[in-house]
Image 1: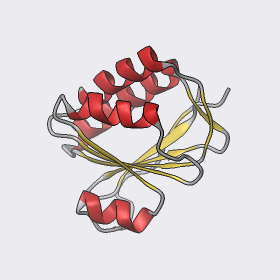
Image 2 (image 1 turned 180 degrees about the horizontal axis):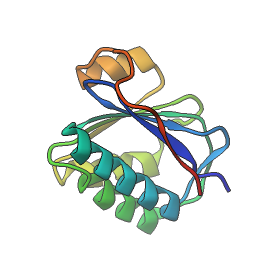
Image 3 (image 1 turned 45 degrees about the vertical axis):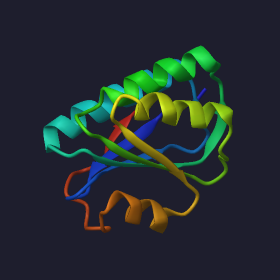
Image 4 (image 1 turned 90 degrees about the vertical axis):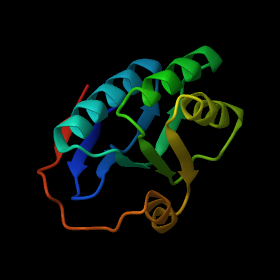
Length: 136
């Protein structure tokens, strides 16, 4: 099971990159949201781009509900763009976005990075912080 990721502050947004072979699990997303929350507060930033390839989605409806609540607690008025190469919208991803959205967090899925950046309202600047790797 791989739930590793890196975090970078890029002047106007937080960039999260999943490691190759990433698997979405409840424990992995709990660690992810905690790390993102800490990073957002450190850099006073509420725009987040999460991207990568998802190899496995190992969550049921109850897990997705909890993940949506955790995502909504990251930072006030968070705006999160999810940009995954091989992950398509389904009932669980839509439910996740609905749960977080009902708590004031904007989340939208994209397959195109440029569209995700436009939706966030950010440009691609030079990296400001050294990437922080979170390995499990």
